[in-house]
Amino acid sequence: MSTTITVRIPKELKEEIKRYHVNINDVVRRALEEEVRKKKLENAREAAKRVGELFSKLPEEEVVEWIKMVRREK
Image (cartoon, rainbow, N blue to C red; front, top):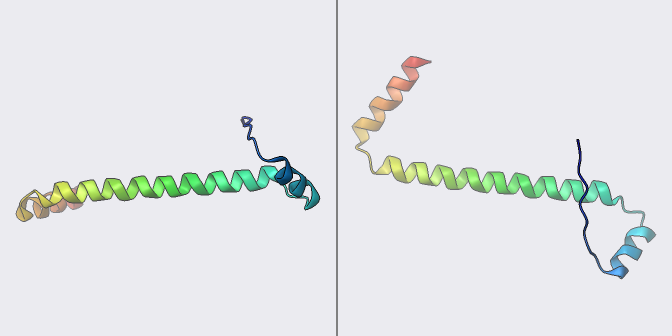
């Protein structure tokens, strides 16, 4: 399933796109996929930072025991 998006660009850019036979669909799709990938990575980094901050507030022994417990469950 797909959806349609609309973007306004300067007339000059549209003419250059036509002149150089730029495949708008491919360019926009790749750019959007890359931007989403960057945002996901940014969100993961933020989540990891928050988890690290939470773990830093716990006693080290408690964290070690929790890790051991999780490993035993696998």
